[in-house]
Length: 391
Image (cartoon, rainbow, N blue to C red):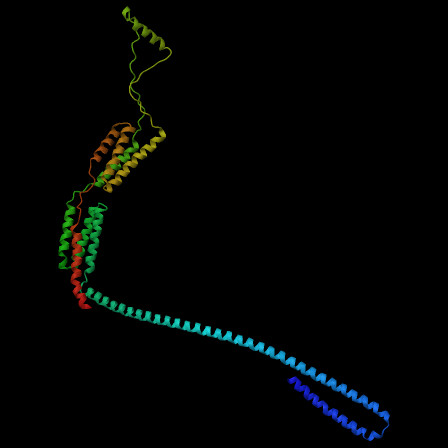
């Protein structure tokens, strides 16, 4: 419609010029009315040209109007498309903004919850720290009280530890001498405490000391020296060689003059004849196999090993193992070595050692252990009222 209005305006603008031209033509024609007839033909050509120009102007106006309309229509469609795109983009951005706001809100809520949880944890930790501080102060007061009223408490603990060591030495290592020394050391520690409540413990310790001193102890050092002596003698033992039985005396091959002994004479003649070719000597008894020389060294070393193991069993108070090792050593000396005076004396010593009881008759318990435990309990009971008052 805008283009049509513009065309109409242009048409109207064209018509006045045409009217003016016509007026001018008429004005020009009026003086020429009296002109000759031959001037009418050029005037007709001028009108035709004006009409053509008017038509061209109208066509141009219509074309321009159509072009403007088409251009405006395309512009409007493009603008509508851009507007729709802008609306879509705006909606997407609004949706993203809403999503971001929702996420931010959720994150803010989570952060607030975390902060709240941390605040609660910090409050609980603070309460725990306060409780710990109170406990620390209470313990400090108790320690101060212990340092004031029970300065000798550590002496009792030291004595209890020494008594445990004495028990281990006595029953695990079979060492009563060291156990007695540890008991005396524990008694000395309690004596330095100067506490009348510990007198029953001292009495129990001294009873244990007297009990251990009265135990008959095996002279393990002396037995060990005897084993060492036998071990040294084992090196000089002589390996037994093969011993052949006595040769049976040869039968008499002399012929008899009595005719009644003709059978014996025939047998003797045959025996005498065969001795020129084959000699047979009969021996009674079983011949033992001879040990190879390269095995003799191993035999002596094994004998020494048996004696060394017997010595170890001695100091460990393993009576059965001690006897078993000595029996095997005795058997080997009797079977594989020459039974001279040295070997016989060694066998006799081994037999005597087997008869010894190497296990000490130690007491099964120490009364001082129970007394120490009872003394510790009584001391703790005496300290509890004082500690409660300190709190």
